[in-house]
Length: 262
Length: 351
Image (cartoon, rainbow over all chains, first blue to last red; front, side, top):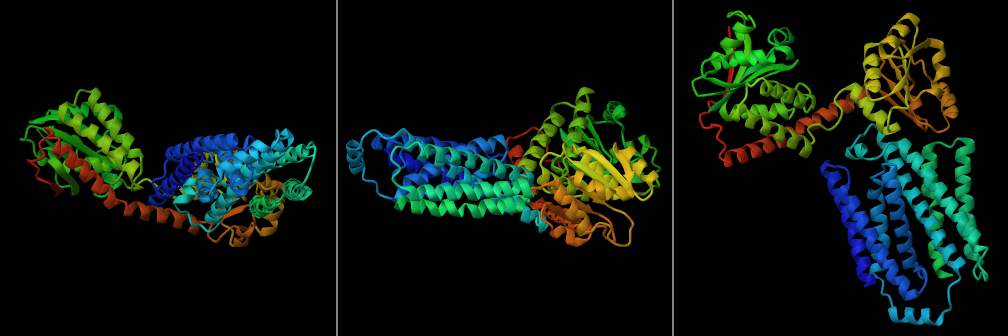
């Protein structure tokens, strides 16, 4: 059942993405009711998937790289639903949907040994709540940084169109650069706060077995804090902040592979 | 019952003629009744805007385009030897013409939306005055439906088509809402005046005018509801404004990279939109290379307006097909408006 929910969720994100692409190509882009409906639908199925997997693992379902990707996708959609509507960044969905879709399509195709997972869960004791908090909050931070990456891409696209005097249909549908710049700042702050909580909770864990993971998280924290600090103190331009949000995301993206193999 | 449309517009008559046959809002009801007094005329709607005066009539079959022209000449005191190019449409063609007018396809600025409201007002005046009945009520209701359909399902209204509109669109895509934006106008030229007014009409506040002649700066500031500053103070003001409109008669650039760099540092990342509508240019083009600065000159603005107009023109065939389809639906429904007795179009040039 969990795989069906994931497939349905993936289908929703694909549908939402395809709808906006078609609408933008014809130039008849209207407030994205269908895209929003698809994102909400995908989010609901994603919750059902995570719930089902949670029952199997008897803990937060972030036990392998694919579940981690799905969880980050879930965090991104959650943030999109809050940010997208609150800050009228409706087209954030256009750039979010393909990323989440890519995360999920791999998870859908990957086989999952349910029986083996049930056995592992049965043989394991009750999970340390600090571990659960550390992992889930840290991954939520990844979601926020991923959304800052998405907003950064949107900023650069809009900035380029205005500078090059090349106002295509997308220019009229992308949010104003100032709004995008504010969104990047807020998403980076949100990510940094969540990451801080993740780090603090890691220090409450009784047996920290993999300190290398913590080093990665510290490195991320320093990079993002440095980026925001430089922006505030030295007056970094919004374009460079957007570029920074895009480049900085390389670290969490690469760290996913590292974390899943240690 | 047949329908007929007769009149003139910006394509057929200069403003000197159009202003003579314009019917003010206060006289619409009375003029509608005067049209209905012509033998055979049952219903009438007069559409009078700055670009057109058209009379739509439902008649019993006896009325002719000539009788409407006679009425116009008498009513507006146009002598018989005056050469005026009217046009007339009957039956299906009259309906199609109204549908195109309501869709903004017959407007001076293709796709403009104001005409839709003007047609609605003209119809409302006729309806309230009791000059319409079954035929014109149906025809105009259909025109509103089609006008809305065409606008919604085509790109006939998309893109700004004037320098002022392009500037406003760009400003909104840089800052979002313009309510918190401050505009500084350097130079008191006509285009800078209209551009500043366009920005103010979309909510921009805090208008500042700087000009070599302080008197002229004060005059423009009064007109657009802003305040005047000395010309030399414009550089110090730059960090505090969001949009700069430059249009002085200086023979060389007056705003250089150094001026803007200083302003940008103080703005702490807030973007600066610079509109240079002067020829020769007032702002050094190198300014456009700076981060957080968006620079447009008159050519850039006009190019965007021209492209938007071209895009709208490419929509004409699509919109015509939509109108034809809607017309076909109307006929298929067996509407009792008699389009069969159509005589088509008539260009009437009389002397």
